[in-house]
Length: 578
Image 1 (tube, one colour):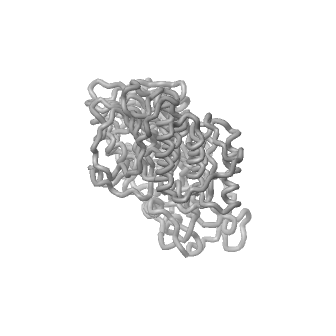
Image 2: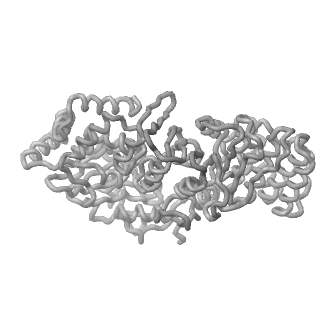
């Protein structure tokens, strides 16, 4: 059977103790043929019906989607009253060079593009793309309101130039014309997708004022492989994230990086001194360890102006996003504004250089003092511990049972994991690793003592298991190996208020990642302290509620003041912006 597990997933599974010989198959987004309508991309919801009707028409007539959408673009440009004849002719020539023998569309209301919609053609193009193709190429276009928000956070004048290195169908350039009155001659864009470039050109021609006869400078080209021959005052856009075809860029100083990091690095080379960069980026740029090199580059080569948090923006994409605006220059006495809805925090840029991995998170001075206290306490970490993923059956309906039968045993899922103790299992499984998609080594499940934790969670939730139970993939496994600590005392630290605070302030992730857990500094204990804490945890497991006493022990171990303890509780009760 063909294996369709991504390399990144394989690496994660291997790192967490999975047996990759058992990996058979899974539904992988990079191979998905499913189509998703981009609801958040359109402003007039009535246009969804028309776009889906066009998609149905293409399917029923068995038309080539790319040929049809080029026909539609030519049709709109040809019959526009605002586009000069020379530009119409040039556009049609470019379209014919890309898709020869374009036929005229039937005269139908179905094919009338709503020009009040910022990017009708782009919405249709995304609808016609399979999810797998979009995922491989990082093809997720930015809604107009988000483009407006990002552009509105910049400072520029109408005579400055703008360059979008991953222009797509042109939404940023369109909004610069419509909302900021930037002349077409000042707009420039590149993209590796020739169809998207043609649609971007059509969009700009259709949205430009009738008295602006400049032809759009939007061309096919790979920004990461093209030498810098022209510099710009403003570079804007939404570079691809995690595009599968991106290899190490020749110009880059990074050994390995995500595609968006290469775009930032190249953009800092392409910008004029004091020029501005404004990108839509995954929230992972702020704190994931592997993105430290690009954060370091930003902090040394740019003056960060603002970082704005946005909720899940793109359908089919789990990651939240941020809007990042910076100015190229030496970061002397610069202040960064963090924006989360109506809340804002202003912090000195210099402060981020001292945070672990230069994480770009809104850590106030009082929080930095707490971090200093914690890290200055003698400690060890979880890097030498044993880790394991829960079982991925490949078919839960078949293998996971709701009642115990002969040969099955209790199965722990994420639902059963709560702080310190496990709820009674509600599922059962016969352990047949050869039939499953992925398992950890059986010895990990059968450890005499282990911790089980929820993987998808923005809090740390660890429970104790000494019954050698199996876990499903919603519940991962840790067998801690730390000097002066037992499994129970490690659990006390991981479930404590202090470590919830550290997880929130340092990582702010919807997933509990091994790499993050390995960074947490677990204080070394004396024999007396270890016995005292183990006793508290044992009583907690027996049914007493001693969480306050455990928290008090851990706060004292790091020498935290009452003011600092109150600050930790405040962050946990509200958020870091309070």
